[in-house]
Image (cartoon, rainbow, N blue to C red):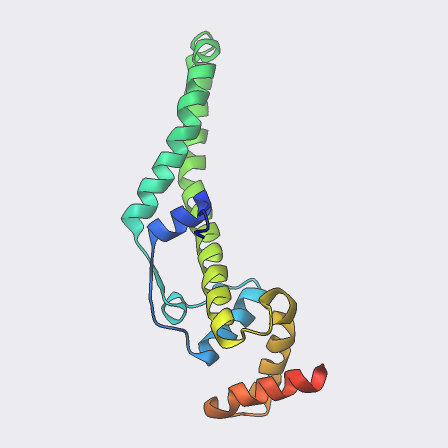
Length: 166
């Protein structure tokens, strides 16, 4: 049974190159901490890279899908007004388009970060759903950093602390 991909997932798969290798536990925990704090995680540690030309192509298609119908609807009323207003409107629309690309990239980066974290979470912690346990494990991870737990003992430390909390 195949799961139908949403448009957002198709766009993410198209504009990002994803690594097939699983994340290291420490990288996953650090990325989860940063994501929960609203920061951008390091893409190389999360195993993804942006294909900028594809991102431009997708963004141009989205902008055209919005602007062509809008200009078809508004052409007649705008043709009858002062050209200076039309010029100012064109300048504002151009600025919004260029600024919008940065927002588009930031939103797509947040989405791919979340997707990669969830994918790796399912491999590392299959019995602990991400939505329910990501904050608890983040707290345990921060405690492990303070206690200077080694990389090789980190997974055991986290699982032991999860069992104690239950």
